[in-house]
Length: 382
Image 1 (tube, rainbow, N blue to C red):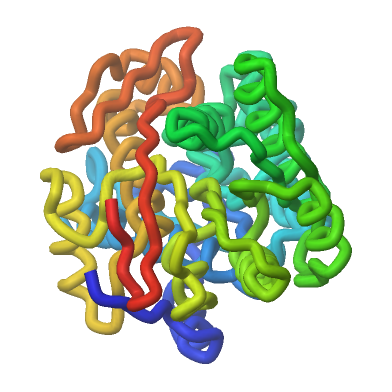
Image 2: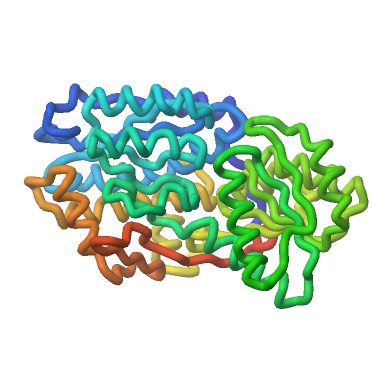
């Protein structure tokens, strides 16, 4: 796959109005009208993580637009309202309260751990489904919560896969660069747990503050541990800044990232500096029709001028597809509780090469993880 540029900030601003058309006032019956089902998404549509929010949203819209063109679900269109939180918890809380006050049917596709962990208690109290957050944090999964529904694998799954690959080739000195918030700490815990099972521990650690790229101190503390490999748990801009500075400091080993980094966004930030950078993935490869699902997503992307496939986009597409399947099973008389019950009956469902499995006490649909490698000429290799 040759390098595909994401939409620029200027370009994304141009599409926001078209994507932000709000539905008519939702009825008191939990985001339902005779003709629409209304969802709310709080995500970063500006700032250091904006491409994650934008691309996930565009991916979901690809599916919903196709669905709506065919008449929706049981005669209702799905309308996805969105508010920008800039990847900041306080703004996410305000957005979530607004959505709940407006009576959306569900909260859909929230982006990130620090925002999701403050939104989920609000959703739970209001008994509003919190569907497919773009995060693998264990704090959102344990203890079990009827209103928290996850499509993707967890950060524990991703970091276990990374540690397994590194240790299988004899690498023992593994350091961790992480964002100093709930997201980064969730990833650090995942790496630490995986290493502890092998009677190991991180060689060194370093942090960066959310929405910043000040990595100088973390470079010093991590390099002091003489790492052979570094696992990164942060957003794409800070990870890219760390990678460049680590190379300048003489680090020649591999750097591993979890999926939340935003693979295409990181690749575009790094350019030729992408050599030796790996990313764990929780979605099917989106750049070729390697699966039926990938082919379906690619066809939808190619039908839209100016769009390009990427992992964040296919995650939004898959989330929309799973949501629609549960909605379809719940029937025309759907309500929130009936929707959740219908989703719990989705056992061993194959979406086209990507199986998901839910149950009454199982709200994580997939544990799929694979590792990909970025190249200096703008490709993503499986």
